[in-house]
Image (cartoon, rainbow, N blue to C red; front, side, top):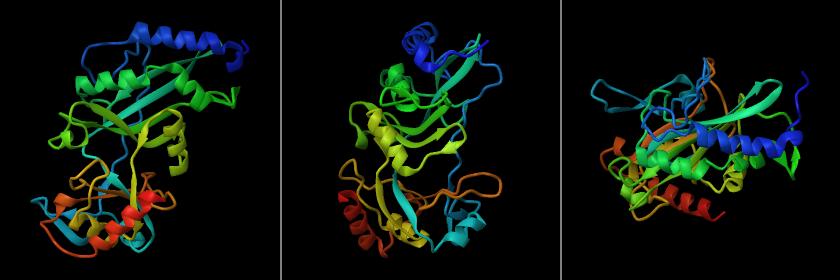
Amino acid sequence: MKKKSINTFRKEQIQMLADYLLENFSGEMGNVGWRNKERGNETMKEFPKIQTIYRRDERGTLLEGQYAIPEFEYLKDNNWVFTEKVDGTNARIMWQWFEEEGEWKAKMRFGGKTDNAQMHTFLYDKLVAVFSVPELFIRTFVEKNGETIKEPMDVCLYGEGYGARIQRGGGNYIKDGVDFILIDVKVDEWWLKREDVEDIANKMNLKVVPIVGNGTLQDAVEMAREGFDSRWGDFIAEGIVLRPRIDLMRRNGERIIAKIKHKDFKGGEGRGGELRKQAQTASTV
């Protein structure tokens, strides 16, 4: 049977998506936000593992100078992009297409860091409120200027749920509520570039993790050691997530991404002040 083009059934598709969300929505707490009656072997793509720059000893103390993976040591003097690490909980929004009787259909599911991770009910409710608008995904990932750009693609939005009652310092970000902030986007098997992630965030009215500077791995270590003000207010940011200016992969296919937290250090001085100015300058560009 010949497949219908998306343009042919766009209006019916949007109505079908709305009906699907209403029919399959589950108010019960669980690891998936939407029921998937025909899930089969499909799984959501789990959050990529982010390594701390340095190894730790058996007590969890950071071993400065002992890189967690050889790629960090090899790339330590390269230019890395720093984003503020938000102290929240991982959240994923998965938009999956499937073929049924010659037609493309779609479903949306929510997940945490892994497929078995639990999610706060109040964060789950926020995700429902933000993402239960099928036309947002159609407009962002299927169409361009009202025209179909290609056959539909699976999409996974990776982000952080943050705010009051999420982690100890959640109220520093939002005193009386929670929100979702976008970190990464994967379309089929492609990780999108930062500028494309920002474009998607803009189209979907989402926040995206802020860039707070750039430099070498040692620059990030010094910046995190001294501490810098969070973009959310007058408190010290949890830390930094950093990646090479050009995305790179390890031999096993994992992305090369690092993190370093302020709490990994006990006080300390260094070049953090200079790097903080760098971060403030970056925010105005």
